[in-house]
Length: 217
Image 1: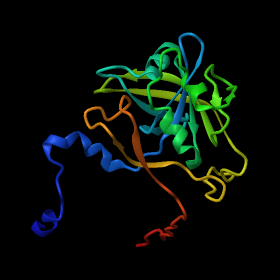
Image 2 (image 1 turned 90 degrees about the vertical axis):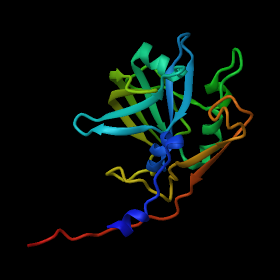
Image 3 (image 1 turned 45 degrees about the vertical axis):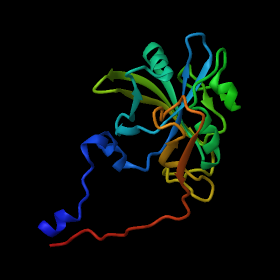
Image 4 (image 1 turned 30 degrees about the vertical axis):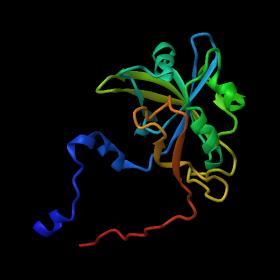
């Protein structure tokens, strides 16, 4: 046992907040919300997961401290958002939507996305993305520096050929975006205000199939 323990490398306390990145890669999405002035807003997030099968629900985590993200403010006000799943080909545009806007600038328009009217919520979907989940908030809690948003999925749809009939990704037609890490040109400001960011994505090329027989006594 001691030999096994020696092979484990512990994350030191001065960087312990990075322990959550052991869960990488993340699967970033583009979240569309409705601005206070009725404008379309978009931003990328990777902390999203299914939390219920019946009914279909997702959990989305957005930064709430020291400053709330605009998407969080929009969701708190309207109770609605759309999850848009981008193809790897949209990686540069996804990163572009992470940067803060200039005065009177709109992220959705800056990115050149096409608004796709949603079916059951007010925020629009993004035509260029491959799949969409329209969501209605059931609760928001604030466990740490991120808010945890739980939401029911009211409508879901995807590009023909991007998924099989039982919602398995067709890797020939859809390269999902899998995010490993990002690096900032300014270590003191690693998120949105620096001159630029470098992001590392996984480029999926194949699938591994594990066929495991059920154990018999």
